[in-house]
Length: 319
Image 1 (cartoon, rainbow, N blue to C red):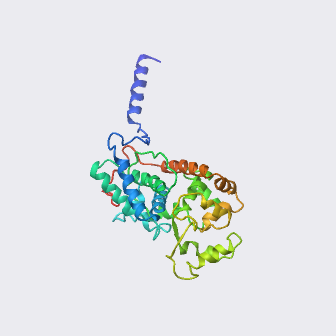
Image 2 (cartoon, helix red, strand yellow):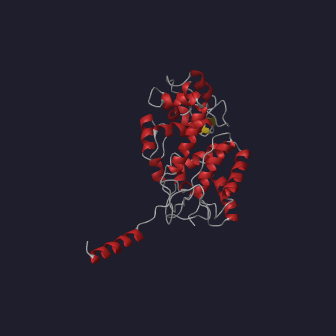
Image 3 (cartoon, rainbow, N blue to C red):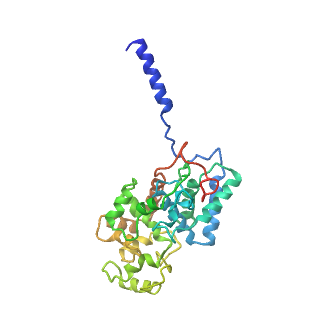
């Protein structure tokens, strides 16, 4: 290579390096210097909310899940409708179902009071899910931080992206796989249904089906709270035994054909996930460990970082 060719190569290489965007990485220490009290402030807000209403723990974990499955973990689910878009909150899988927005907003206000414009709503939502799990005796995990918030949301995208309570196993596996989550992640994350409640409309068809995959006494008990017609919004705990404790009883329910939702019971129905369910029944510590690991992987789905996205002042509005 000649001298002039060498100079040209160096110049072109330098230009390429300068103009190649830096892929920022999430880090558990992201706010250590810019907002060192952020995590403790969020934890206090979440602890108070769950103490006031134990069901809120399940709602906050679900809110994080439904956020990450639609255009990544960017707090898009928190955005209210605007003149330029219809948001995710009224999508089929979210409407009259997702909740906890006011808890995240309160945590955001508390963080803004000590570190204005620093901590994203997406990160608060991710931390809140971890803190909610801990608050009801569930596993903890190290949350990666550094996400930024989206400026838009899409009801249509949410409807197309989120799993449904009627989905068969193959559909669920494919849905999770599209986002880089494996079958074990699917089963572990479904275990969050060891807490929380479901609306009658989501399990009516199952308890009145007289199918072989539902235990008869369980179906009879559920019918007392969910009539064949009407009462769509009546609630029933996903786990009758320990509805407010994060444990592995969800998987015992599946083995006994007492999964409330059809999308729960398909995890133990003679298919490829039966062995994982059985493992979690026999090894609650394995479930807890796998759940935490799966939550970390889910929280890393397509985050906005670096110069992408914004830091919202309030979580429901794109500044």
